[in-house]
Image (tube, rainbow, N blue to C red; front, side, top):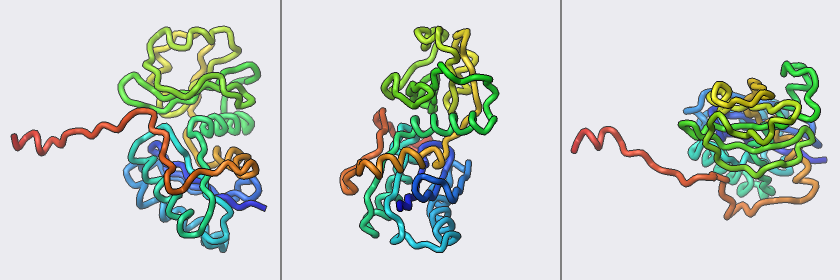
Length: 238
């Protein structure tokens, strides 16, 4: 038996899931992006208490490794590492875009995505990277990786090489700004948001393969270097 706590905080969504043997049993989520630090600790506490568990009862902790918000990723990874350190648990890293693709497939199976037949489609989860840039990865409906995760500057010709697929499906918080720019005839936009529930199967597979991270040295996959902005207060003082 495996009991895995999954944490996803790389976007405005703060999400925590508890799964037993790859089956979701509890979920907590919030869209209050600026309250991740407060909400995350509360969600972990609530999920453990409602299942009459302590952190010591867990078999592993999984965390969304990114790409995504620098601050959000740091909060999630810090919490995951803290639990692992305190309880001697293995740490699992799950790609945030791949787990978002899992959410899309689950939503399709539940009839929440209005596409008649998804077979032969390309899944393109997108995370906002500001301006017209997104972090994106490409997957088929079996979750086979078709293109490495990277930053894309979106214009009307983006992903034109995939015009012959059944559907080119974009989703995630970076997709909204792209749907009216890209000119793919097979483009489909779906409202799908990140969730720790999308990590459950991937975390279980990693656990079974014993694909664990070094708790001391693991860092999120930022993809781009963090650039700190200059405080407006400091500018006004000059």
